[in-house]
Image: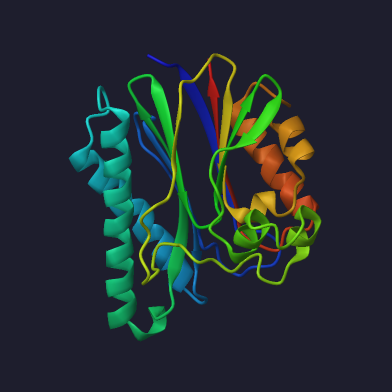
Length: 246
């Protein structure tokens, strides 16, 4: 069995009045989720809280964490996200104050000795292996789509006016299917991070790499990453989960 140590931090930050991010780690360290809510007032908070309540419940019902194959894991993750999407839409239609609510979701699921990652929206998962940082999820933002098509440069993407405009998220009436699932066979020394965009918006990849390696205590690493994002001027809530493979 893979031996894993984790740490997590979720803060309101320096500019927001409330924390619309939610974070979830199950007691057996098999499921990790970061959700970044949107919709103003309390709507974003409700959406992200709903996502981290509904998704784990559905995964627990459908998934055998000891032996499921990759195809089954992908199907279960898609079903759990789709279920949360329907519920968030339904609630937004009956409560006027929640009309435009939605949330991103990024998660890591441990099945036997493999890790699976999936993201909807622009919260991200990263892997640090042998000193090299790799983003494991793709942003579902208009800017990323323009970047992928070669319409804008990576430099332009950093400040593009649509960089926070999402075309896929939980609460999206166009549906949430089709997000890629990345499978990893972990190695000792691997480090993984899930984060809301309040973290990666403020930090360059080189800084994330440096901080992920800065301590052997995952809680300390998470705290350093969040502090660095706030010090760099992040104007959002900031949430971070760090997992270290022993």
